[in-house]
Image (tube, rainbow, N blue to C red; front, side, top):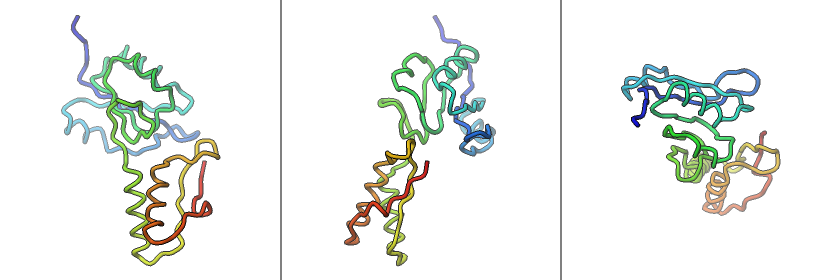
Length: 166
């Protein structure tokens, strides 16, 4: 049986807390459409929504060519196997293993930024990272990059150099 895929790409992202606005600002659809040669639609979810269930509904209704998921997955990775539409994760540090993803290089990014602050003469540097639960810090690779820059400058990491926000 032949697939009934459309030429539409769905960009899926979460809204900010309580305001319904997307967490990320994207270029206008025309930019994506001219680059990709397909139509583009955006679907914004609340952080309380089930990402995979929403994708299943879109898949059943519109049969998109591709889902582009921006930001965190916030769901169990095994659930994605129930989808037939290809997925691309962008800025999703928790993207399911084995799925295509475009993410930042947290280690080299933190290392580079911290090195540039040292090169500018700064000696007291604090790394600010977020925490989902107020206890465990996200982005361990970013912290390791920060620690490596400290080590290269003969400084020891002190937990007071790390601040978290929730």
